[in-house]
Image (cartoon, rainbow, N blue to C red; front, side, top):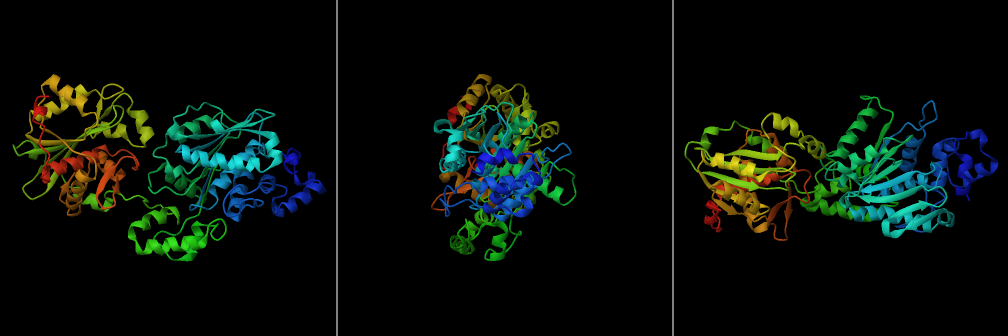
Length: 544
């Protein structure tokens, strides 16, 4: 078996290849140009495996041309000491183009194939347990379908773990939502569908864990993320700058297969740009039917451009586009808060380690609504959370756009005192609030004698849909004045809208990229200002 002979190929030149191994290279369909290179050993090993699922299940695995080009680019470049130069590599294509298959092959290359090292630690990473399980199952099926691998490797289904029986090397599948602890010493990480990650926390931890190894490798195999400020988008942009010669970095490479921006949905040449496996692993008839549906149903277009054409387009329905939001980037008139006219509020409390926001809304004499945000965050951890959320919290705090609260968690007495000081100068007519953690703040209000006309505001479709509608209407008309407040802008840009079967809408934190707290507070403030609701004010909250 070729797997038994891999050690004979390691670190040897073409001249050392025996006639037997040359014949084996030919039988494994390894291009002759790769015979004397690390890519040749990788391709030969991959072609000894069996396809574990999908259209070609049970057949000998054959890497596609883009996959072979990727392997060449990652494994062939070497430094003067013969060590692999690449430390990070990205392979990005549309969905259903064999990404998980490629991830499984790379894991086995390092666990039991030609690139294995004794006692190596390998991980596949994913955002969810479900996605992590998919990669593990591909690896496990490939092992079970190969008798030699079954002898060499031990599968532990309960923990999604594979151990090399002889030298202690092991592979495990991990998920961000599992909240696992990862120590130093990872040799290889294959991050599957990084585009699904809501933040860079797991990526950052894993990159740190790779730091101490001789030839560490972070491999990212994913469809593009929809947003430019996503960690994957930033990494791809960095790699494209290297390819364009704008940056010198031979440790990093990116292979991006994507349709041209703004292309016709029915242009089949564009389909192939993002889907090199179209007609092979990827069924072209299903693809064609999906694109025809998207042309007729506009709500499908952005999703399919992202997932099928691998374009950086919001797959989820964004709340407001930047070109609409910027219409309200005019100077705020702060005197409106203090001239005796009614002021309305929206209050959104988060977990004590994140952002909480009060947005005040007040009408001017010309039919505009001016928005004044007050956004609090724990001051002692502001730098760490800025890195986690990929947001300039420290800069915003220094410029008074963000209020750092002393301590590692939000002190609700601090928030109550701040609101109390405002209420001594401002005529609050109504403050809508999300009920999350409001009881704790009410207790602080009661202790400090703060009187605020609070009104509960549901976060479901019934309450949120008309609020979103009036908020959008004002924004489109340029009558929502916000002065370009950067934290409010960031929260609004992160927000994603969910729809029910009847077309009603609500803002959803679960599907949003980044924090949306100030955006939710702003919508509730405008609703208090402009909508007549049936909800009665909590008169008791004036003293509770």
